[in-house]
Structures are given as C-alpha cells and as structure tokens.
Image (spheres, one colour):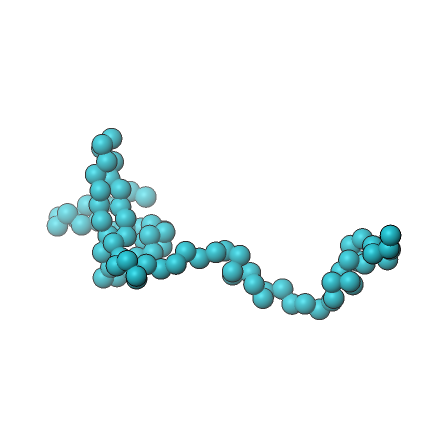
Length: 85
C-alpha cells in the first residue's frame, strides 16, 4: 500500500486501514508523529460514540442448525457406551 500524495497534500486511506480504524466518510482521524520518523494514524471519535469491538465468535452464533441431541452426538462420536461407568 503506497498511495500517492495529491497536489493538495491529500492521500487516500486504503479500505483495509479504514475498516481497521472503524472510520468512514466525514469522520475524523488523527496523525501523530513518532520519534523514529513514522506517523501513527488513529480514529478521533467522541467518547460515548466509539463502536464496541466485535467478537468473531458472535458471527458464528446460530449458524449451525441443531438437528440431533447432545446424547445422539455423544453416541456418534464416542460409541453407545459413552455414558456408562
């Protein structure tokens, strides 16, 4: 990712970086110069307005239909005597 600087001093922030920061059109970002010559970019959102982080596991909830009971699954994976002492 090496976007070019325009005549006005503007640069397009790549989509992957915008998604990572959680910013969209009209939202503000902050540039912080670092001692080693690099620049950090961060989202500037009001305190109560920050989007909560999403848990990738939440996307999986409800995606697997339950067609068999737990007992049936245990029998399939461990055999008929899975629950016997």
